[in-house]
Length: 345
Image (tube, rainbow, N blue to C red):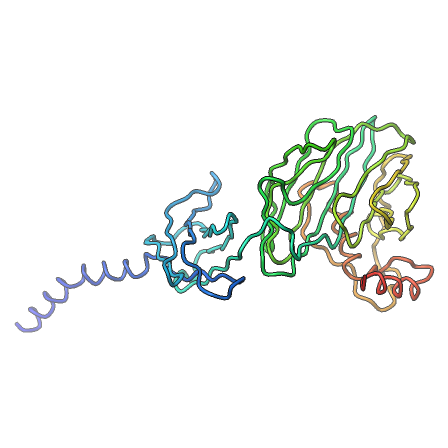
């Protein structure tokens, strides 16, 4: 009979053990670390969110304690979840895919400043697509922040861009380091045709994709300004479009899309565009790549949402990131030397 009593006692304890097991797994725990100071960060708000068809849904949240620790008593199951840590006016995302650890997590945050600090535009590209009395302008900005402070200025914005003769509204998507592109708010400034984007520039690489439509007549002068202090600015004309202007340096044709790339010297430009955009030849970029002096092949970076400009901007940015591979075919040695000299400035 003793075995029967033991079995009864075990069965009586099972609900308690099951409850304790669920309780142990029904929590998200971790520490918030301030990378700027190198210390645990108290007072940061950590939100536990579910990702679904309705977007991001807040389930629960907690504040980090004096040692930076936080506990959210929620079970992680089903669809992916997202931790959003808010500190110093900036939000940081941490994905929780199904099956990933949910305890002893480390969430990183930074102090924020209204000054750019180490943040600067390392690459800026403008793609012009004229058609039927108007022109679509696609601008891509790559901000590199090598410091340990986030740049966040809700009042004045971070990225400023110039869009004259605007037809309709401009749209901006922005991607934080390691994040996906999301819509970013645009505000009109007191300066004519100047717009500001409210999106923080965190340490690492942040990408802005700006799209707007302007009035344009074929062959008529079009003037633009570069408001950011860019290390490298490039103007791009799609296949079939001829672009002419001063202060431009012909850098060659992107082999797959046949888009023509020009380096811009200075902070303004005046160009004329003629022709009709055409699809690249079927064999463009196929087979063996043109001689690249033994350098690496083109690599694509994060694609744009607009499928009509994915190939041009992504591939062109890939070329430039790899040191102008496949450009300056007539004098590759001189081109690489000039590229290296420019990179040191």
